[in-house]
Amino acid sequence: MSGTAYAAVDWGTSSFRLWLMDRAGGVIAERRSDEGMMAAARAGFAAVLQSNLDALDVAPDLPVVICGMAGARQGWVEAGYIDTPARLTAVLDRAVMVPGQARDIRILPGIAQRDPNAPDVMRGEETQLLGALGLDAADEATVCMPGTHSKWVDVRGGTVRRFATFMTGELFGTIARDTILSHAMAGAEDAVDHEAFKAAVTAAFEAPALAANLLFRVRSGQLLFGGSASAARETISGTMIGLELAAGLAGQASASAITLIASGRLQVLYRLALETRGVRINAVDAVRRGLAMAASTIWKR
Amino acid sequence: MSGTAYAAVDWGTSSFRLWLMDRAGGVIAERRSDEGMMAAARAGFAAVLQSNLDALDVAPDLPVVICGMAGARQGWVEAGYIDTPARLTAVLDRAVMVPGQARDIRILPGIAQRDPNAPDVMRGEETQLLGALGLDAADEATVCMPGTHSKWVDVRGGTVRRFATFMTGELFGTIARDTILSHAMAGAEDAVDHEAFKAAVTAAFEAPALAANLLFRVRSGQLLFGGSASAARETISGTMIGLELAAGLAGQASASAITLIASGRLQVLYRLALETRGVRINAVDAVRRGLAMAASTIWKR
Image 1 (cartoon, rainbow over the protein chains, first blue to last red):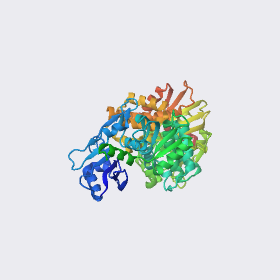
Image 2 (cartoon, each protein chain N blue to C red; image 1 turned 90 degrees about the vertical axis):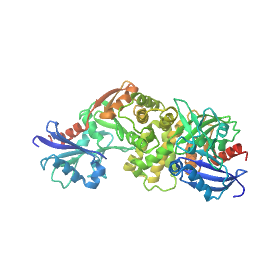
Image 3 (cartoon, one colour; image 1 turned 45 degrees about the vertical axis):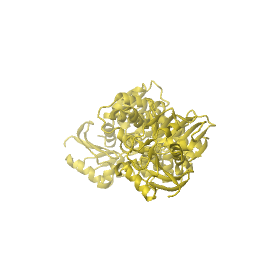
Image 4 (cartoon, rainbow over the protein chains, first blue to last red; image 1 turned 180 degrees about the vertical axis):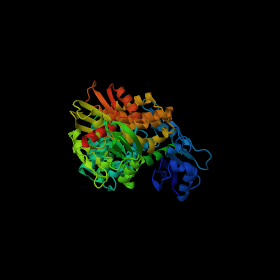
């Protein structure tokens, strides 16, 4: 396609997103699929990428910039980690070129916190941080990035100082699917039960030690008093998010703002949850913009 | 069999245990299987019980006393609940007879806490409490009953005042089986890694809000620093048990004793966990003795 400057790819564990971008950072075309790292490890990373590019009929020399799990040890080419304290610009400087390819393909590294008392890793979120905060981020920011593995990140002067990953989304998923509580939320409607959700956030935030009991109350409450499947789902969700907030907001000044990088249903839920704590929120969209910044650094385009 | 006075059955969600008992409360024979409520709901409760009794060649009029999920709404015959504050002797007085059977079969009720702010239910554990504490339990006791759904029970003067259920065991199971952490603990050996377990108990006890982060550290710690599968498993187990203890021991005088009703691996783990908190432990074995007490009350034998 004429005007296409490069392709940007966010390659997660279970999802694949690709955008064709112009020189100004505008989106020309987009593709999404479930060809994440798990699927691509079987089908071949090069084949998955090529088939998606073929579907968009791009030039054979169109460069590609990739963030996420494609750079993991079990991914395509290991892109390593920048260690904390990690300047976000170092992520751009340390992109790894995929060898033996007809086109120029770069994979961005992740960030590692090599603290034996709080080891942690991210892959993909560093690119979202770049997109959300910009290269020149001079201010302090506490960033909340909800998801399967939620990240809370302390950024100062363009540097990731500390971060912590919470298995909130994955725990919610397995509790909802694989435990006795799956019966309590069977048939839940799409609409969010705001009141049940906020009450659960508050309960878990105020007494995080009770988390495994608050979850069981979903079942015993339904047995003894009834209640809807949607309320049950939101109570489980609110319990897990309230537990995360109790740690993420610890030590935060009450008047401070949280930068929330999320979209869709997760943005709705985390907004509601943070509002119950009286936290100000800056919500931003991020990963594509981060990849565009990487492209303009790597290829000056 | 001569000398057999009755059969006692602990009928759980996924397990079935039956003992033939003599008049003195001694065990003549025992059977265990996975014909719990889930399996028996398909095969038929009467058929499952009869086949187990047939295998032991007992008299057709031998009476049977049952506790557990056979008395649930989705069980054999609903045996209802005694509400808190619940005298343990009331459990014996309110046993429900199964109608239309050739032999005398009684199912013991559970206990319900009909508090809209902390709804809770137990079925089977009330019989363990009877067995552990005895009918005349005059003292105060805080009882910890580890399991799929751990119970912490406040008993005074033979009466269950309050209790709370924690989904500790079920959460551990699904985290170990169904999340990314399953890879971290693949191939773990049977032996308990005491140090990893105790460190995880302490970390979760002291910062319960971090639970979902402490779990992710199992993965990131292994990625960045290595570590054994057994240590990973015990860290997950210790995190979940430490979280439970943070709630269960809240408000306990430090010198007070906990009555621990557990056996096997769970008794080992909960002993270790409680010892990290300096708690004194009275460990007891319980359910069969509770059923024997029920039999002697119901049939005066």
